[in-house]
Length: 328
Image 1: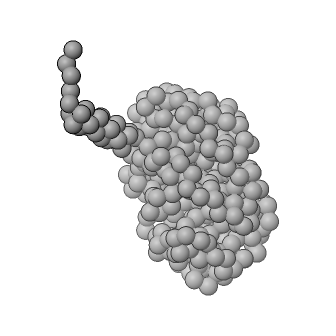
Image 2 (image 1 turned 60 degrees about the horizontal axis):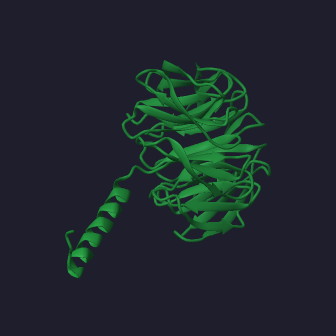
Image 3 (image 1 turned 90 degrees about the vertical axis):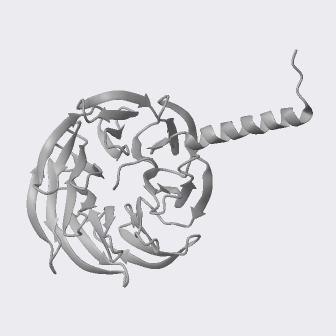
C-alpha cells in the first residue's frame, strides 16, 4: 500500500477542492421558472433537465426580472408586497425587499437609477430611486385600469406601460414621473417590446390574435400595423440577432417569430399548454417557455421547429429567465 506524507495529502486535498470549485464555476447557470400559484421558483439544471430545488417567494409572484448588471434575479411578489432577490448563478436567495405595493411587473432603467413597478390590481405605477441597495419611493402615478407590462427605452428616459383592461398604451417621463401621452390599442394589451433604435413598439394583444406595432419616433405615437400571430398573443423575447422577435400565443398554443424590419411572421412553432413567458439560449437555438396550463417548462428547438423536451414544474408557471441568454 502506497503511503503519502502529510504534506502530500494536503496538496492532493487542495487540488481536489480546487477541481470541484472549478467544476462548479464552469457549470452552466440554472433556468428559473416562476410558479405563480405556489409562491415559489423552480430551479432547473440545464444539463440533466431536472428540477433541483424550489425557492420560496412571497405570495402570488408573477414576473421575474434580471437586473441590467445581471447580479440579481428579482421576483415580484404581487400579493406579498415584496421583491425576492436571487443569485442567478447559484440560485441562493440574496435578500427580500419589503413594502413594495402590488409589484405585478417591474423594470430597472438601463442605467439602474430607477426601479419602476406596475400595480396591476391597484391601477398605479410606482417610481423608486435605486442606489443599489434600497428602493426609495419618489412618486405613485395613477393610471388607467390594470397596468400590465412595461418597456423602458435605451436612454432610461421613458417607460411604456400597457393598460390591460383599458386597451391603452401609456408613455411616462421617468425624470418627472408624469404621463407624456396615452393611445388606444387593440384588445387586452400585455407585453411591450421596443426596437433597438427606440423608434418602434410591439404590443402583444392577448384579447386578440396578434401584435400591434406603434411608431413612437414623433411627438405622438402612431399605430402602423397589426401582425397576425395567433390567439392570445402575450409575451415577447428577442431572438438575439437584433432583427427577430418571438411572441407567445397563449390561446393558439404557439410561438411566432417576427421579423422586426418587415414586420412579418417568418416562423411558427407549436407549443402545447398555453405558452407564456420565455427566454432564449445564448446561441439562439433553444426557447425556454412556461407552458402555463400544463405546469411544464417546454424547450423548443428552433432548428427542428418543435418542442423537444418538457420538465414538470409548479402550478401556473409564469416567468422564465436564465443568465446564459441571447442578447435582449
